[in-house]
Length: 219
Image (cartoon, rainbow, N blue to C red; front, side):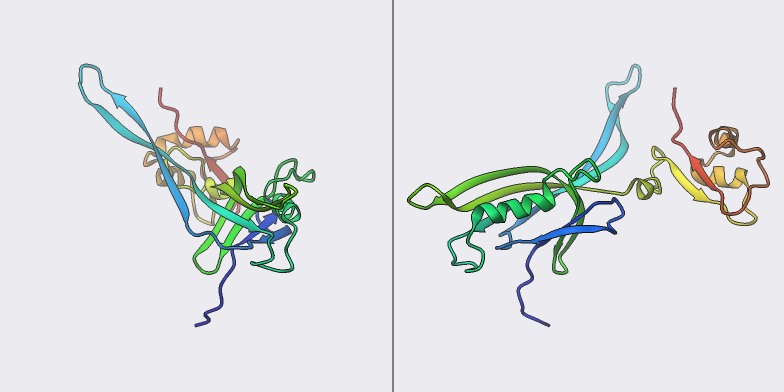
Protein backbone atom coordinates (compact mmCIF):
# COMPACT_ATOMS: atom_id res chain seq x y z
CA UNK A 1 0.00 0.00 0.00
CA UNK A 2 1.37 3.41 -0.98
CA UNK A 3 2.23 5.78 1.87
CA UNK A 4 1.97 8.87 -0.33
CA UNK A 5 -0.16 11.63 1.14
CA UNK A 6 -3.43 12.04 -0.76
CA UNK A 7 -4.41 15.72 -1.10
CA UNK A 8 -8.00 16.89 -0.88
CA UNK A 9 -9.22 17.92 -4.33
CA UNK A 10 -12.31 19.94 -5.21
CA UNK A 11 -13.58 19.37 -8.76
CA UNK A 12 -16.06 21.72 -10.43
CA UNK A 13 -18.70 20.65 -12.95
CA UNK A 14 -21.17 22.62 -15.00
CA UNK A 15 -23.86 19.90 -15.09
CA UNK A 16 -25.82 18.03 -12.46
CA UNK A 17 -24.71 14.68 -13.92
CA UNK A 18 -21.07 15.54 -13.14
CA UNK A 19 -19.94 14.76 -16.67
CA UNK A 20 -18.53 18.16 -17.79
CA UNK A 21 -15.63 19.19 -15.58
CA UNK A 22 -14.69 22.88 -15.69
CA UNK A 23 -11.83 23.03 -13.21
CA UNK A 24 -10.33 21.72 -9.98
CA UNK A 25 -8.42 22.90 -6.95
CA UNK A 26 -5.96 20.92 -4.82
CA UNK A 27 -5.73 21.94 -1.18
CA UNK A 28 -2.37 23.30 -0.02
CA UNK A 29 -2.85 21.48 3.29
CA UNK A 30 -5.37 18.75 4.07
CA UNK A 31 -7.98 19.58 6.73
CA UNK A 32 -7.05 18.47 10.25
CA UNK A 33 -10.61 17.13 10.59
CA UNK A 34 -14.05 17.37 9.01
CA UNK A 35 -17.65 17.00 10.13
CA UNK A 36 -20.35 15.11 8.23
CA UNK A 37 -23.87 16.03 9.35
CA UNK A 38 -26.89 13.88 8.45
CA UNK A 39 -30.41 15.12 8.95
CA UNK A 40 -33.80 13.42 9.29
CA UNK A 41 -37.02 15.44 9.31
CA UNK A 42 -40.12 14.35 11.22
CA UNK A 43 -43.57 15.84 11.76
CA UNK A 44 -45.38 15.60 15.06
CA UNK A 45 -49.06 14.67 14.87
CA UNK A 46 -51.33 14.69 17.90
CA UNK A 47 -54.64 12.93 17.81
CA UNK A 48 -57.73 14.62 19.24
CA UNK A 49 -58.11 13.95 22.95
CA UNK A 50 -54.65 12.33 23.29
CA UNK A 51 -51.84 13.89 25.36
CA UNK A 52 -48.98 12.49 23.31
CA UNK A 53 -47.88 13.37 19.79
CA UNK A 54 -46.73 10.70 17.34
CA UNK A 55 -43.61 11.33 15.32
CA UNK A 56 -43.98 10.60 11.60
CA UNK A 57 -41.03 10.36 9.25
CA UNK A 58 -41.17 12.96 6.47
CA UNK A 59 -37.83 12.81 4.70
CA UNK A 60 -34.08 12.60 4.98
CA UNK A 61 -32.67 15.98 3.98
CA UNK A 62 -29.31 16.40 2.22
CA UNK A 63 -26.30 15.87 4.44
CA UNK A 64 -23.51 18.42 4.78
CA UNK A 65 -19.74 18.44 5.22
CA UNK A 66 -17.75 21.23 6.80
CA UNK A 67 -14.06 21.77 7.51
CA UNK A 68 -11.31 24.39 7.59
CA UNK A 69 -8.79 24.86 4.79
CA UNK A 70 -5.47 26.57 5.53
CA UNK A 71 -3.94 28.65 2.75
CA UNK A 72 -0.24 29.35 3.45
CA UNK A 73 1.76 31.58 1.12
CA UNK A 74 4.93 31.79 3.24
CA UNK A 75 6.74 29.33 1.00
CA UNK A 76 7.11 26.79 3.81
CA UNK A 77 4.29 24.57 2.49
CA UNK A 78 5.03 25.00 -1.22
CA UNK A 79 7.68 27.36 -2.54
CA UNK A 80 5.81 27.56 -5.85
CA UNK A 81 2.54 28.77 -4.24
CA UNK A 82 3.38 32.04 -2.49
CA UNK A 83 0.56 34.32 -3.66
CA UNK A 84 -2.26 34.04 -1.12
CA UNK A 85 -4.74 36.15 -3.09
CA UNK A 86 -4.15 34.03 -6.18
CA UNK A 87 -4.67 30.77 -4.25
CA UNK A 88 -7.96 31.91 -2.75
CA UNK A 89 -9.10 33.25 -6.15
CA UNK A 90 -8.39 29.85 -7.76
CA UNK A 91 -10.38 28.08 -5.05
CA UNK A 92 -13.29 30.51 -5.39
CA UNK A 93 -13.35 30.12 -9.18
CA UNK A 94 -14.01 26.39 -8.79
CA UNK A 95 -16.21 26.30 -5.69
CA UNK A 96 -17.81 29.71 -5.15
CA UNK A 97 -17.94 31.98 -8.20
CA UNK A 98 -21.02 32.34 -10.38
CA UNK A 99 -20.80 30.28 -13.58
CA UNK A 100 -22.67 32.21 -16.27
CA UNK A 101 -23.21 29.14 -18.46
CA UNK A 102 -25.36 27.49 -15.78
CA UNK A 103 -26.50 30.66 -13.95
CA UNK A 104 -25.19 29.43 -10.60
CA UNK A 105 -21.94 28.29 -8.94
CA UNK A 106 -20.53 24.96 -10.05
CA UNK A 107 -21.59 21.51 -8.97
CA UNK A 108 -18.75 20.03 -6.92
CA UNK A 109 -17.05 16.78 -6.02
CA UNK A 110 -14.93 16.62 -2.87
CA UNK A 111 -12.33 13.88 -3.36
CA UNK A 112 -9.93 12.81 -0.64
CA UNK A 113 -8.22 9.50 -1.39
CA UNK A 114 -10.55 6.57 -0.71
CA UNK A 115 -12.07 8.23 2.36
CA UNK A 116 -14.31 10.78 0.65
CA UNK A 117 -16.24 11.24 -2.57
CA UNK A 118 -18.94 13.80 -1.88
CA UNK A 119 -21.13 15.38 -4.56
CA UNK A 120 -22.24 18.75 -3.35
CA UNK A 121 -22.44 22.53 -3.65
CA UNK A 122 -20.74 25.15 -1.51
CA UNK A 123 -23.15 26.92 0.86
CA UNK A 124 -20.89 28.98 3.15
CA UNK A 125 -17.32 30.29 3.01
CA UNK A 126 -15.68 32.40 5.73
CA UNK A 127 -12.11 33.70 5.35
CA UNK A 128 -10.06 34.48 8.45
CA UNK A 129 -6.64 36.05 7.72
CA UNK A 130 -4.09 35.06 10.38
CA UNK A 131 -0.60 36.11 9.26
CA UNK A 132 0.62 39.26 7.48
CA UNK A 133 3.67 40.83 5.86
CA UNK A 134 5.06 44.03 7.42
CA UNK A 135 3.12 46.01 4.80
CA UNK A 136 -0.16 44.38 5.84
CA UNK A 137 -0.47 41.96 2.93
CA UNK A 138 -1.89 38.60 4.12
CA UNK A 139 0.33 35.52 4.08
CA UNK A 140 -1.92 32.93 5.66
CA UNK A 141 -5.68 32.38 5.92
CA UNK A 142 -8.06 29.85 7.41
CA UNK A 143 -11.12 29.34 5.25
CA UNK A 144 -14.14 27.68 6.90
CA UNK A 145 -16.38 26.03 4.32
CA UNK A 146 -19.65 24.10 4.34
CA UNK A 147 -20.86 21.92 1.47
CA UNK A 148 -24.37 20.53 1.10
CA UNK A 149 -24.94 17.18 -0.59
CA UNK A 150 -26.32 17.37 -4.12
CA UNK A 151 -28.55 14.64 -5.50
CA UNK A 152 -29.61 14.64 -9.12
CA UNK A 153 -33.42 15.16 -9.24
CA UNK A 154 -33.85 12.09 -11.44
CA UNK A 155 -32.07 10.02 -8.77
CA UNK A 156 -34.10 11.60 -6.01
CA UNK A 157 -37.32 10.47 -7.70
CA UNK A 158 -36.16 6.87 -7.29
CA UNK A 159 -36.32 7.30 -3.49
CA UNK A 160 -38.38 4.69 -1.64
CA UNK A 161 -40.21 7.22 0.53
CA UNK A 162 -43.99 7.36 -0.07
CA UNK A 163 -43.66 11.15 0.03
CA UNK A 164 -41.46 11.17 -3.08
CA UNK A 165 -42.44 10.89 -6.73
CA UNK A 166 -41.48 7.46 -8.07
CA UNK A 167 -40.45 6.74 -11.64
CA UNK A 168 -40.86 3.32 -13.19
CA UNK A 169 -40.01 2.19 -16.72
CA UNK A 170 -42.58 -0.31 -17.98
CA UNK A 171 -41.26 -3.66 -19.18
CA UNK A 172 -43.15 -6.17 -21.33
CA UNK A 173 -46.03 -7.82 -19.50
CA UNK A 174 -46.36 -5.23 -16.74
CA UNK A 175 -49.76 -3.66 -16.16
CA UNK A 176 -50.84 -0.58 -14.31
CA UNK A 177 -52.73 -2.23 -11.40
CA UNK A 178 -49.67 -4.23 -10.31
CA UNK A 179 -47.31 -1.28 -10.78
CA UNK A 180 -49.62 0.94 -8.73
CA UNK A 181 -49.85 -1.62 -5.94
CA UNK A 182 -46.05 -1.94 -5.89
CA UNK A 183 -45.73 1.78 -5.12
CA UNK A 184 -48.75 2.48 -2.92
CA UNK A 185 -49.81 -1.01 -1.73
CA UNK A 186 -53.20 0.07 -3.08
CA UNK A 187 -54.09 -0.61 -6.71
CA UNK A 188 -57.20 1.60 -6.48
CA UNK A 189 -54.87 4.56 -7.05
CA UNK A 190 -54.31 3.47 -10.66
CA UNK A 191 -56.94 5.89 -12.03
CA UNK A 192 -55.09 8.78 -10.41
CA UNK A 193 -51.80 7.50 -11.88
CA UNK A 194 -53.37 7.09 -15.33
CA UNK A 195 -54.69 10.66 -15.21
CA UNK A 196 -51.35 12.00 -13.97
CA UNK A 197 -49.53 10.31 -16.87
CA UNK A 198 -52.32 11.04 -19.43
CA UNK A 199 -52.67 7.36 -20.34
CA UNK A 200 -55.22 6.17 -22.90
CA UNK A 201 -55.35 2.64 -21.48
CA UNK A 202 -54.92 1.00 -18.09
CA UNK A 203 -53.84 -2.45 -19.26
CA UNK A 204 -51.69 -2.36 -22.38
CA UNK A 205 -48.91 0.14 -21.81
CA UNK A 206 -46.05 0.22 -24.29
CA UNK A 207 -42.80 -1.26 -22.90
CA UNK A 208 -40.23 1.47 -22.25
CA UNK A 209 -42.86 4.01 -21.16
CA UNK A 210 -41.83 6.04 -18.10
CA UNK A 211 -44.60 6.29 -15.54
CA UNK A 212 -44.59 8.85 -12.74
CA UNK A 213 -46.23 7.95 -9.43
CA UNK A 214 -46.74 11.15 -7.42
CA UNK A 215 -46.98 11.29 -3.62
CA UNK A 216 -50.47 10.79 -2.27
CA UNK A 217 -52.21 13.86 -0.93
CA UNK A 218 -53.81 13.20 2.46
CA UNK A 219 -56.78 15.46 3.21
